[in-house]
Length: 183
Image (tube, rainbow, N blue to C red; front, side, top):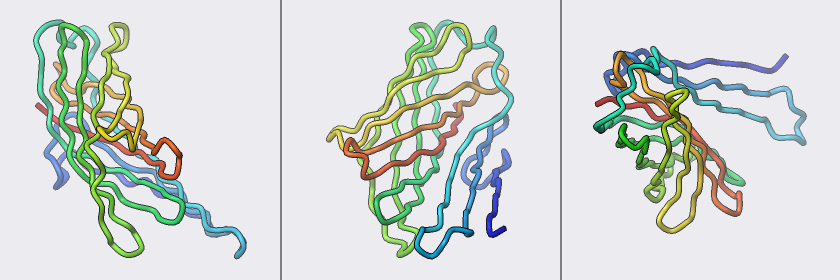
């Protein structure tokens, strides 16, 4: 009673980026059944999915550059912001190293006000046993830190997807989302 759940997905032919093997979406839960003294709770969980690259097909030499889009949500003490932006990722398959950046803007849901987040720079390592990668995000001014977890998609790592979590060190802003891209 008074609760709703939604799964929002994008098709590979979404208007943001044309993808063949990867897509992304969000699961949303509203708890409108809260009392008037307790605020309504809205949870957002972003995810990526697709046809994963078999471990045997992830290159062991060379590198690849991926470009794509990012979406997410950022909560502060009073407001909820939609995050939208772009992703760049460079994979060095010989060393297993990943370098990625997110350029994000935050849009206040109540007033449509906007502010740009500092450039988020991430590093990660590709697992030799799973082909997934895990790492961390930082900003030049240390106003945000975070994490990245992702995978490659398509026959030979043609596309990439990852989830990210970010927060200010004092935890007054917490958020996360998803990024997808292709070579």
